[in-house]
Amino acid sequence: MNDIFQPKLISCLKNYSKKQLGRDVIAGIIVAIIALPLSIALALASGVAPEQGLYTAITAGFVIALLGGSNVQISGPTAAFATIVAGIVAVNGMSGLVLATLMAGVILILMGVFKFGKLIKFIPFTITTGFTTGIAVTLVIGQLKDFFGLTYTHSPIETMEKLSEAVKCFGTINLQAMLIGLISLAILIFFPKIKYVSKIPPSLIAVIVCAAIVKIFSMDVNTIGSLYEISASLPKLSVPSFSFETVKNVLPDAFTIAILAAIESLLSCVVSDGMIGTKHHSNSELIAQGAGNIVSALFGGIPATGAIARTAANVKNGGRTPISGMVHAVVLLLVLVFFMPYAALIPMPTIAAILFVVAYNMSEWREFVHLVRKSPASDVLVLLTTFVLTVVFDLVVAIAVGIVLAAILFMSRMSNVSDVREWKAADDNSKQLPIPEDVYVFEISGPMFFGASDKLANLCINENAKAIIVRMSGVETLDATAIHKLESFVGKCKSEDIRLIFSHVHDQPMKAMKKSGLYAEIGEENFLSDIESALKYASEITKTY
Image (cartoon, rainbow, N blue to C red):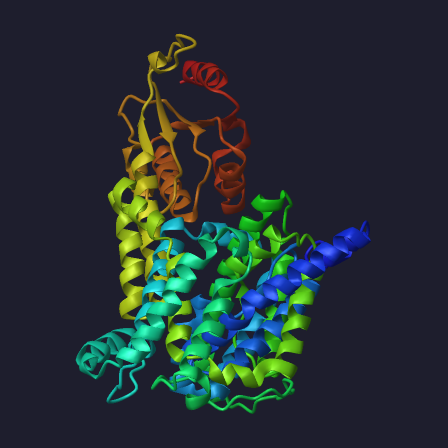
């Protein structure tokens, strides 16, 4: 288990100093100030109570920092989960969300135990970019109501329904709400450019300034307090009741949460590794993410994962060990207990503006445009398909279709580089190798798998052949379908009394041949290390005919 679960906190404490403790505490406090309005905003975007965002950042943030495989990861609610969580709550209620999050936690732990951390790299960049940009668009659409102060005729769940409702009800626009939204956006965009105050989180300034404006001028603008009941109580342990039917209903949601949490947290780890020159332990991080989500669900939170922006802020402010992540959670706990009632004053258009900026920052639109302009058509197809399906349907459909489409296109490319052709001595640039009379040589190149195995039909038998050499120097992989095709060719050679010889067989194809019994059927003596040996051996055999 030690090679799977290696919390970074243990190694970081070995040479820990008072100086680094001070830096970690300062970084943790700053990140908590950044996380405060974000956690509340993301909770509201997820369709849950505002304090549940803080519950998530406190419980999951602390546990993941304590157990995680990254030095500086900051975890909590993220924008990627907002539309997913809102959909689960709308369909299955809070009990369904709690159960889905618990199950996702278990799945994440199993992913870590079975060392799935390295497998995340097999998800193409086009898919991660497509669904990230798609999530950003859905987040923006979901906030149109609060930003413009619209009055909806019903409560739509799906993204396209929300867009349709926003367009239909745009005549109900509240100009005071829009003004507060625009002021909030102006603060969020321009405040960081002011030289001497750029370190203060602009979202915190936007919340304070706009709450004061709404209160002082008694503006007709919805606030958190006018729409939700605010609780400053500590999160309480609650184990949900469930049935087999509920488990079956939320199982797809649980897998969605787990896969997205794994992808986002490990991407965040990779980014932070580049910033501080360390190397995270992916499987430990998955186990920690699983434990964090389980604790979050049990204490009234929502799904959590590594937050790239908050992790980057942690690094930039001096955080270098998991202590900063734990301090961030403790500071948020103190805020929850002593200052949470003031959250009732926060205007909803300000929350929407904060989420607009979050969506913009996470959208990766520059990467999206670059991929569309510079990538092969097949990659652009995967990118656009994933993006459109994320917006129109949901993330489960988008990732599933995207991965299947990417796999099919990849197999098509691999089959195009695979080939079976007759080999001539002149093909070898280093030597002129004479081919004995009545000996034919074929060269197989590229991966031989089910998508390319039909090319093995090019292995043909000449009526004058006494021996056939199959050169496999360019074959690194061989699957069951290719083995089956080779078995048929071996059978034909035996029926025609033709000696079949193989040269340059690499490790994986050799193991596959031995396991299938094909190696024994061909005979150990008919496997040679190089083409020179194979030609010499074939020459000796043909003399005996």
